[in-house]
Length: 192
Image (cartoon, rainbow, N blue to C red):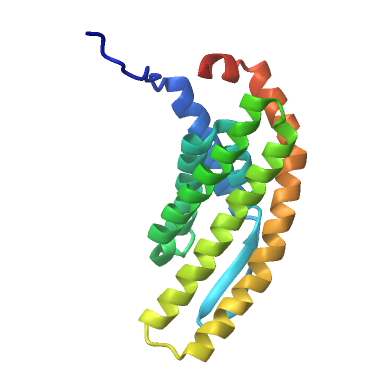
């Protein structure tokens, strides 16, 4: 009797280095931000979303999620947002996982551009839904009035949605440049 086992690809040092490089880019890009006060705290518009999406599109779901979660989680821990680091890590991982998984479909069926755009949109939409849902639940659990929580979520939505749309566009525009650089470095051949 022959056992059917899926062949697992070994994670190489090269994989770890490239994932860490994208985590660092996510971290650095998040430092380019505008903080905005809300009724229950503050939110921000930042460039980190672009690199979270690029990580997902270039590295795939798992590695893109790890890079996004690590980069923005470190930003929260070191940048004065430590109380939100656990939720950021989970939400950014899911964002990368979804966006990278959807983007990867295009590599299999030859319609890469369409699937890259769909991957970027789905990753960003996943994050926005998770972020706004988390903000709502957190506000309620902390005992704030529903009206105040809704105003807070509306303020966060008014920054997150437009920022997310811009991030999707910029990530899709930058993708070919990063893809070319990673291809020239042999990343995709070593990843296979």
